[in-house]
Image (cartoon, rainbow, N blue to C red):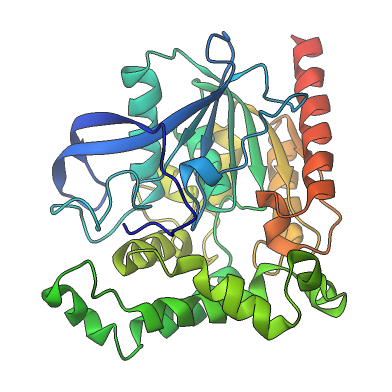
Length: 359
């Protein structure tokens, strides 16, 4: 992966899995999981946070600043497989063409349980795709994690969410410089389809926040004089430094997300079909779970989160629903707005405290 000029991949550690069998079939050697430890490294309480789509370890909101809810925890931020820091199409010649959330969770479990010797996780958290990792973790390893926090995310990708992703994905795949993948025959670095990657970011731009955000011209607070300035100066550049194969493999994994596949032998629905997800959440989850959608998220709809919490509660799961009231849309969950981030931190802190009081 080619990082942006503003990103510094410093202080990362790597756990090497000698051999990992992927859900798609192949067994691949020397799979690396990139991570970094924040917060209080000596703490007996451990939290694991997954990166999100387009997210990197050192840019991930980790709630460890002084007074934040995880500041007294040993917080491990781990990169998803496929993000360019952990093993990915861009840096591993034998990486499979298809990636599943179960692969990511198995790799992160190998990191924490076998690599770091952690007997259980006090907290498993994530935003967006990271929240989907957290959901899958709760279903796949129910006895390993005690508290789950899923922010602006879902247990399965809805049909609307799936369709939204077809837009930016198609912009990249059909760009003149992507050349149906022929760009790789000219050498991976230096020949990346920059026009396609910029088009991906431009198509994505309208979905990041909300209609209210645009009406209020919130881009001005970010230093841009016009919406076009923000699109060209911020949104287009979001994926400019990424490897296209990493962008695509993660987008396809996102589209196929469904915790129901864990209990249905891989046959859970894609794009919101099927209801095996209800059995997965109702029968497998043992952890307390805090679900925090954004009221104005355009693709991880708060109504879907509300339904997931209802299903869990009816099954006896200790699930709680807390909506982020914001105009920042999906980006609110990643720390885009200081006020929203403060609210999330306070809400998470009170929820964790409630759990401690209950024992």
